[in-house]
Amino acid sequence: MDAEEIHHILVQRFGDAIASATLDAATPFAVVAAHRLLDVASFLRHDHALAFDNLMCLSGVDYPKETPPRLEVVYHLFSHFHFQTFALKVHLPRENPSVASVESLWGVANWHEREAWDLFGIVFTGHSDLRRILLPDDWQGHPLRKDWQDPDYYNGMHVKPTAQMMDRVLQGERIGVGPFDFTPPNRDLEPS
Amino acid sequence: MTSPAAGWARDWDEDGLDTDEMVINMGPQHPATHGVLRLELRTDGEVVRGARPHIGYLHRCFEKHAENVDYPGVMPYADRMDYVASMGNTLGFALTVEQLMGIDPSPYVQTIRVLMAELQRIASHAVAVGTYTMDIGAFTPFLHLLRDREKILDLFEWTCGARLLYNYNWVGGVSHDLPDGFIRAARDFLREFDSVTFPELLDLIIHNKIFVKRLANVGVCAPELAISYDLTGPNLRGSGVPRDLRKDAPYSSYQQYDFDVAVGVGQYGPVGSCFDRNWVRVVEMRESSKIVHQALDRLEAMEKADVHETVPKRVKPPKGEVYGRSEAPRGQLGFYLVSDGGIMPYRLKVKSPCFTAMSAFHHLAKGMMIADVIALIGSLDIVLGEIDR
Image (cartoon, rainbow over all chains, first blue to last red; front, side, top):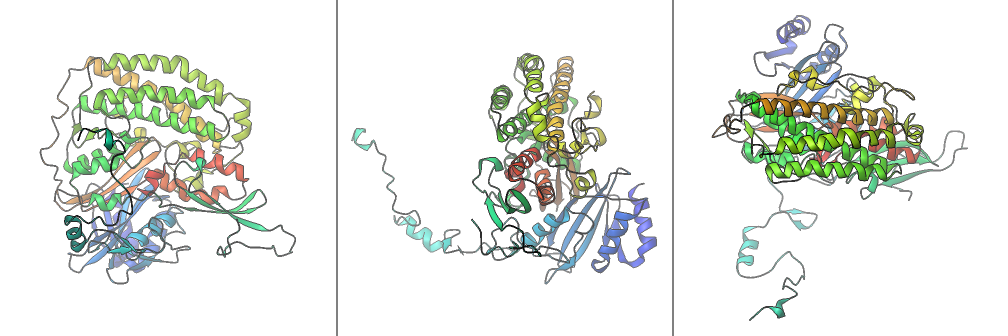
């Protein structure tokens, strides 16, 4: 079954919930209305003709310059029964993005969704354990968003040198390196 | 060692007759966790009632870095994800970008890539199996396997100057042609591997009663669980599911090579045990050796060609997106690449096989003895550099 047939089946069953589709791309995908995602995903997972039993990848993508600005969640699916692949996308607003968790369909979604929450701030409703996964628990913000600015401090430590710090360094002051002595130990042996 | 903050630990059972449950932190500095992995184990005596892996100690912002360097600049970062099998990472990334750009490297380059990828698979499985035997108490196989891995690394060093992080696969080609005499040296290595190391390996590990008895009933992963948690590569094949991208969706002309896919059959216990996963790795080393032999035959029959012939002057894929997959030694490595037509990736998400294998850990570890947890981690063959990226 090729991507067009899968798309046809989805449109017949879900109508307007399938907003659009790009089927001639290297990896064909259909865009699903966010509030119907769980229905569509559940159908793809359980229908015998489709049987997408494997979630290969779940990715968040940030498009702040599109109109309207949006976040995307992309689900790459594979069927071990029929050897076919397909992808779903949902578009979410950049403020308070939220979509249903697909953890009940594919176990691996648990960690992928935690990663998308961690790095993009996408909330997956119904997720059993939505915590940060790659970044520290006390991290503020979601760094893979395109408008991310590095913080100046993290737990009291300078993350990156400011202009004032660079000025002080250029004037010969040694900052942020502690009381280390960097003179080589065999200095006396060198010819003066 | 009990952590009062761990509210999920239950002190008493309903009937009040249980022993105390205790939360034990295993890692992040633990020699058997193969890197910096922290496991939060809820234990009842020696029995693990629940496990929560904590990852991220080795997070190096690969995906954020990739959005800020050009495509050739991503390669060294990709090298550093799975640092035990770097060739597989860069091959996967190169194939993904080539798919988007429509580049088809020459048969000579494809053969070199297959040759390197399979040598890397042998080297990677050597570490996996070797350290695994060490985890569960045998020291000798580790030395034998590391001896052979060194020889493969010498071949790599001879070719591209690096022993671990090669930056060898480029978009559209490879960085260096094979040096003169490489084929003969590789054949010398393979002769020794096939006739000495591999039979030794079977004697020391696979046909060893201690090894079999220790592992044949431990850490059983059902095929349904494996598919639901997206286990791939040797972990999935160990559960008896014959999936291998080199056969199912061949890339780099893998369809022209004659080899078998090793699938766990459960000779000594249920299918999907720790033993099966390791057995698959050992058999795969032999199959990779077969592929390397064939690749060397093909290279001998081929005219030398320019390995930079199809390398684009500027790697600038058209606007679009692609999900590229390849069979790395640890399983399916996926790259989801979104390009906005610029010289830097707009978004690059990595589906790491170790990440997904680790996400099934809490299921597999439930009800185990603590000593078996070590056996389970080793049999999943995780590399934390790839989990945390």
